[in-house]
Image 1 (cartoon, rainbow, N blue to C red):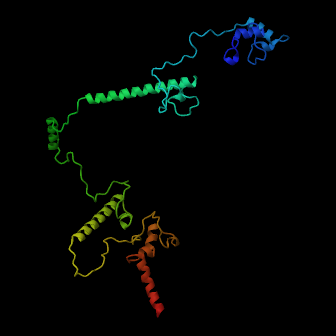
Image 2: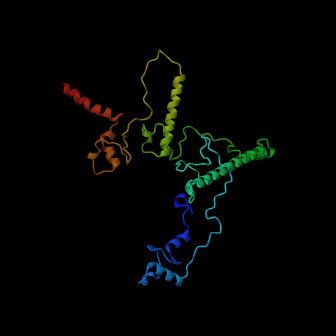
Image 3: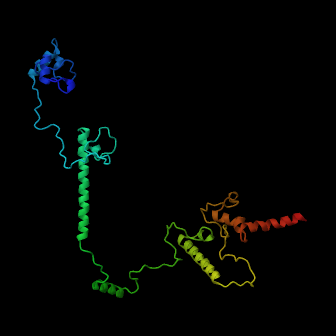
Length: 307
């Protein structure tokens, strides 16, 4: 019998003989459940448990039929450590790197789990490589698809469809005019609807249409001016004013829910928003802009103050 330090030691039968315990006797100090022990007094714990075991049936474990912890059979030969490969046949315990499928494996030693997981990883890798090559071979050997553009049957069907539907375009994208407004909800840039009055108080369809038409008209005017001959003898009349008004505050008043600043709006009460805005001088004047209107009012005062 070898010592415990060398991995040996007495077995269960030898330990029972050394302690002098009879069959069914629990070791003194046992804290588990023992039936009827609390109703017995006057004897030692070993004697009471021995007598109780003679009156009750005990189930003893049978010897194992097969190995209790069979080692998994490896289907691949694990690679030897060369210094360059990551997964080898001798994984060092305490390795904190990633090992495939190791979080789902329990109950074995580190080496057994590593060998089994690496073997499964290699098997799946080889299977995937095999399926990839099989797919490539299948693609190479499959018959090539023939184009149908020269098929007379397809040509006859298209000709028949074109003859029966002469108005609708055939296989051609319908070209739209650049001034056609986009559908409501379009978030892209539309020229002239945010910097002029064309985007105020109008539906999205109408505002975008007017903005695109104004931009197209200005663009056409630019190309006409570039293509015209330069006459150095003509007089310069200055920049022509645009065809649309640049006023922000219109004579018709501001539309409800206008969130911009409206001068003197907070001093007017009792009317609707439209009537209030039309009654203010910022909308009621007839000048080009509110600055010109204010200058026309202050100029007589300044001239009279000089005299």
